[in-house]
Each structure stands twice: as structure tokens, then as C-alpha cells.
Image (cartoon, rainbow, N blue to C red; front, top):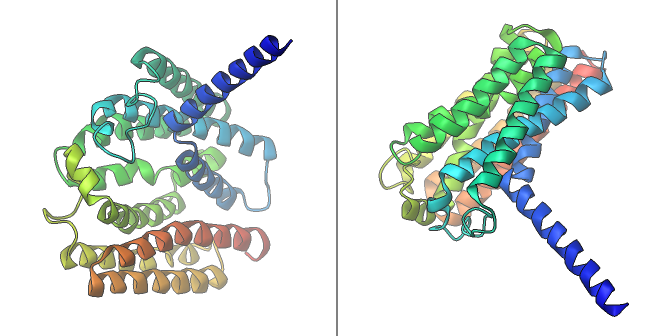
Length: 302
């Protein structure tokens, strides 16, 4: 009886460990933020005419497509992940998962996610989803070790989720979709460079060239961050100009943007890890807060 119980515990532990590895492979936490942005785009498009089933399908498809891109990313960077403390325990880097298994997971998720987008939301939505997956996995990922322009390239698929949500609801690539794209596109530069500032040594070990200059942690990088936050504040006003949100969202976005900008100024003055950490947290808070306010505004005030 005790032996049987021990075997059951072992099997349960193995299953839990495997599920944990799959969660790391598809980067569940990062994936959920992508799904959130896609749903935001959908809700901004439909307003009060919400279709809960469509949101569920969009979330599942978005999770699958992003999970596939993340799995391919780890396949291509397995040897470099071994060099960094932050990533060396990933299942592929730690040899707990072989390439064939990861390829199978990536293939099933990618084909399934794009197929669901095609079937339920149409060809254009599926095409944008496929572009996001392919550009992230096969252009941005290898480019990281070649040139800092990788950050610009990676920001393109990173800004497509709200566009996918908008097109899923409307079947049209309208100017509203481009505005949502611009907000998320500009946000990624201060967000990513703050992370890069904190992990500069680790990225250097793997040969990643992701800072806007060779030294990375200096006032030039901080100034670049301030420039992008300034343009982000301007972009956050555009949804009001196209009658997508009310003045409430504009005021909220400007306040959040100025607080974000203040963190950038602090980094420019101090150029230390503490200021970079504050900026990173500010970036993490900024985007979902602004997006949630926009959605609530769209649903109840516009």
C-alpha cells in the first residue's frame, strides 16, 4: 500500500515537473500579458457589443501563437541560455527537454493558434498572427546577437497583439489599429532597455547586442528612453482624436506618462540599477493601467 502511494506521488511529481517545464517553454506569464493586450484591442473595437465566446477563442489562439514563438525562441537560443543565470534552468538549456519535444510543442501551438484565428476571425487576423510568430522567432531572435536594431525589429511583433484583437473584431486594418500598435510599439523601448540595463552583464555573456550603444548603462541610453516615453505620451492622446475614448483616458494616460517620464529622468540623473529597477516597474504598471482605463472608458463613457 505504501509502495503504491509512493509510486502515485512520484508520477504526480513527474507530471507537475513536466507541466512546469511546458509553462517555462511557452513563457506563461509573458504570454498572458500578450493575450491581455489582444483582448484589449478586441474590446476597444466592439465597445459594449461584447461576445464572450469570441474573447475565449481569441485568448486561446493568442496564447497558442505566442507560446509557439516563445518555444522556437528557446530552441534557437538554447546554447546561449546556458550562459546566463536567469535562463540556464530553462528546460532546453538544462537538458530536461529535447529539441524534438520542443519542436512538436511549438508546431502544434503555432498551427493550432493560427488555424483557430483563421477559422473564427478570418484570413487577415490569421495572417497578422503568423507574421507576429515568424518575425519574433526567426528575425528578432537571431538578430539579437548581430545588432541593436533587434530591439526595433522585436518591438514590431510585440506591438501586434492589440492589432490582432482589433482586426479579430472588425476584419479591417483601420487607423485605430495603427494607433494601438504605435502605443505598444513605443512602450517597448523604455521597458526593454530598463530590463537590459539590469541584465547587462548577463546579456553580454550570451553575446546579445540589445543596448542602444556599446556601453549600455549611461546617459545616452537614459536619454533614448526619455525620447521614447515622450513620443509614447503623444501617441496615448491619439485614441481621443479618433473618438475611440473620452477625455478621461487622455488625462489618465498623460498622468501615467508623466510619472513614467519622471522615472526616466531619475535614471538619466543617477544612471544606477536602483533607478533602472524603478523604471522597469513603472513600465510594467504603465501599459496595463492605461489599457484598462481605455477599455472601461470605451465601455461606459464613450
